[in-house]
Image 1: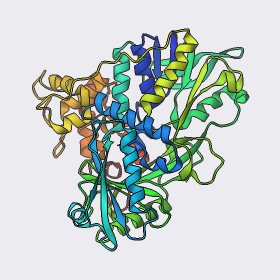
Image 2: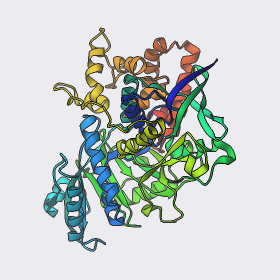
Image 3: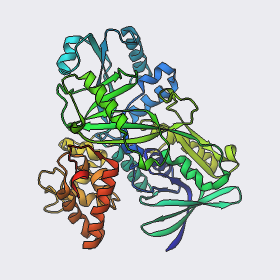
Image 4: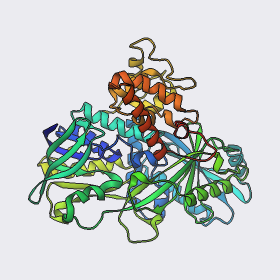
Length: 524
């Protein structure tokens, strides 16, 4: 079926930046359509270290404006998405012989605090060696001189952060579609006038006064649809691998930020859903971002560094539940030192760079700075539409209500009250979907009926987080499919296909390690 729709703005890409822009534009009253080829937040947004941070290390390369912007956005996300974004204490151990003297770190943290302009997080403090070891009993004590404690934030489910922005965009009037792939641009001479796409409802055309390419790591691939009209690539892709382990002897309650001993690059050990997330690496990536997977070299690197920091851990490959990675879209650099490449962002007007009117691209950026980046893109859109620039009209959400279970608050954030009302609307919706699973049947139905979930991958990975649980198994997926089937109109054959597709997606997203058994490795 071929249909056509008309909009002021079409956004290609439903990662954190595209969703943030759709939310702002719809609230501005701009007729907006958001099109995502897979699912909201399913790309690089979901493959980060899951931290909302100001970028402490960027101070060393004098990226002061980026740090200030990041800290402002950190505060905004903490305020607007309560529960989904939460304060995260971080310890920075200090050792004799470190490349940076203690006064250097103290000065950097003081500047970090000053740039936050009186934000709501606690100030940093110096911690003695004895207290450091009480907080991190498994930490290497040789030459330990103490630590600094400071605060950033964690987004346990950044994919749900993107989803929440997309849902709020829809509530403000935007058309919001996932599983809708843009296949070509509509053109009139040197002007882009919209896009063609294919999705569950068939082929469609979306005409638009302005198209924004917000496809993250896929920005240059989407621009490839222009053919030879494009100039040079906008991005350098840098792969970031992470491993997830169940146990870490002397495991920290705090996150730990430390330089790698082998190459001086920073890495994190972060408590996450009762597990430990260790990352990240930084290597140039070429190829399809959807096919990125941690290399053996990257896995060995992370194991070696965490074992050096926590000598008693002695983690091996069998300790890894799963690993994942995603190529981060950095502004293009010719330098081989990608560690020092800019983490900034820019909005590219293709009329200026390529002589193509009606098309903007959002290049670069990171999870934390989505609000600022979207605001910058919105100002360009408003100028192109002849509108007077205005502020985002979004209301400040109320704090998560008292009595909301922490698990629900962390997943659903400002949507938690709606979910709880839904669970109370019918008997049995509050029952666990499977033995040993905390996710309820009602959450599965809520994902399908209220949150645009179309596949089991949407439900298990990006709505409920079930797939990240180390106890998750084929049985959980089958029970979830039983709940989904009536709501999505699946017959037995379609349900079997949904299970097969889910297993393939999980194997591609959460790479299992030998000796581990996440659901992706047990659904055969």
